[in-house]
Image (tube, rainbow, N blue to C red; front, side):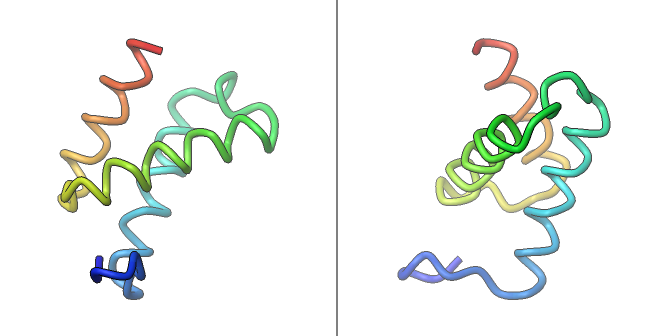
Length: 68
């Protein structure tokens, strides 16, 4: 991600996959659009902290959500 918070197309693919994978594993957690948006914001926060590896991004999202 650039210094201005802009993701390129490859990075957007990683972010989308992380969100979709999480929602596929936890359909109850993503039952409404507001909840999906909340998860998407967490994915973005993790990504902004420098977590760009898709597997690690998913692992961290699981960890963060488990403590939620």
